[in-house]
Image 1: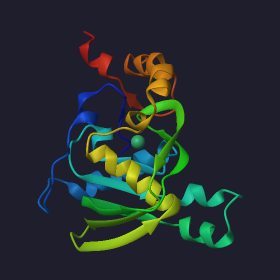
Image 2: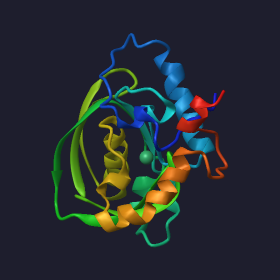
Image 3: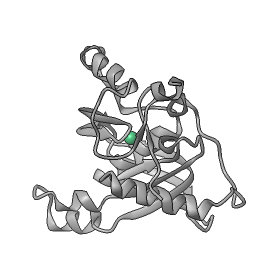
Image 4: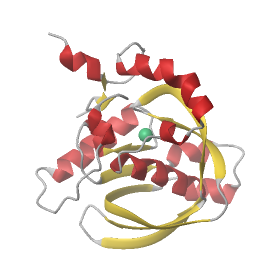
Length: 196
Ligand code: NI
């Protein structure tokens, strides 16, 4: 089932998300619905707060990035089919010199801005079967994970922009939270909840 994606301005995107356990109700169904929702919106990542649930769960499928012709065949191969579910993730380390990449977010349509992040991460998480993994990632995969991880910490990529950039996109962000935007996937806008 495709779920509506929560738009910028909804308080759920600002919560520090909670740890979950194996007995979380209908978890497998929820994960399936989240993949379906992400693919329907052509996203490479989706975090539970973006569908209205403040829990530490996010998914990544970096396959669309593998079609980038600027990458080496090895890099393309690495991205293709990189599909992973992260439960109760904790970033343990971030390393290297920050690099810029133009990020977007399904909750913040039509805005893309360069965001600086460190290139390497070490992360501990549980998979769908609640098996714990500790892994290191770099490049674009690390980038997507960092962006999704921020979501479960209540952080959005727009928070990381310069104050000038923030001023420049302020009006656009206000319009998104009011639903004054056209999007080709299902969204839920904070202002709509108040309508009677
Ligand atoms: Ni996002």
